[in-house]
Picture (cartoon, rainbow, N blue to C red):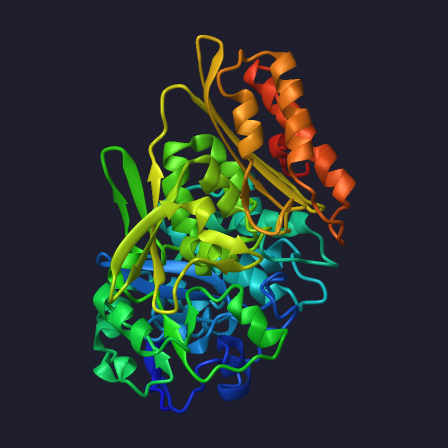
Length: 502
């Protein structure tokens, strides 16, 4: 099989690379093929952020910036995009001082993201620094350049995917907040967009013998799935990327679903919201928190921002990991998934019915998950999502529990409960739902339901928690939900406010 040349924009000029294998990572291309060794390889699994780069792509006529982990991002997935590495911030001619003062152009040598790190002493050993700088650059373009302030909380959230083991986070958070006070720099977005349009996008990407297939419509995507059932389906590659870097798997052919326009849309309807399977976790959670603002903290604790910027909601659901946080939430929201094939069209089913076993599902070889349908909130529902993990940020759940009760006139009218980390698949707590439905919403009901919830699952013991601990946590979380429903304030790390040192 052949691959079309990989093309992207860097420092205002197109870069074209031929014969890039379909499973080669972006980090490998940067460090080994282009000699861009400023981008570091740390964990190789999207946890430490040392490999962070920033991508720019056109969306609705605007340039959209995303900080991503290059270690698990497939190189071909950035075809047709703009790319910035840490070496580019002071060298890209399209990153220009704000205003026309000639003196400013002569004196500015570092980007504000870099200068702020210097002034705040945000670097020590320096290994993690390039990743932090690139995450800061993404923040700068998405917030400072639009006149939006960077609060301490925002800096903490958007740097949660970058780990430091020697400097400490206080000076780095200081740097995030100081960027806006430095002489301004901005990407010349109109010129970048014009240059992106000039990059070639020919039909070779969809050819029958292509090693990396990236159809641009749903019809083409389903046809490719039918024609190449053995191709590895990929989206953001935040999991498949690990199979490449950690398990050393090799793939002769990839089918990328993220270029199909219909899968990248969030479409509101009167009673539901349709989220395309290739919508990033960042954008999907934004759509959900617009309806359920209380989900904001839960959403920001799903991995780190670079993972959420690459990973997709459909990929997380189709992957079916029992510790994937989006599925318990979607189960509690009573979401449905839509599967499609070229031969049989579409079918829709409750999300919890998608799974048949550990990382196994009902999808046929020619089917793809194309969207998730989420009902809009009702006036009576009370939704709470809980994530229990060893680290607060950028960690995998030991237990994830999402409770959604419709309570009216002191009675539970309907209950929907999703649980993760307690079974071989993301699960719906049907027995607990039955124990709650139709009952008066009292402390006694909550205690009885907590006992049912503890007995409903038989979680395993592993490195994250023992089975006994997980069962105990399930019951405790339901009782916590009761207390919060009565107005008792939550006392947890979720309510921690980070303040700058004085």
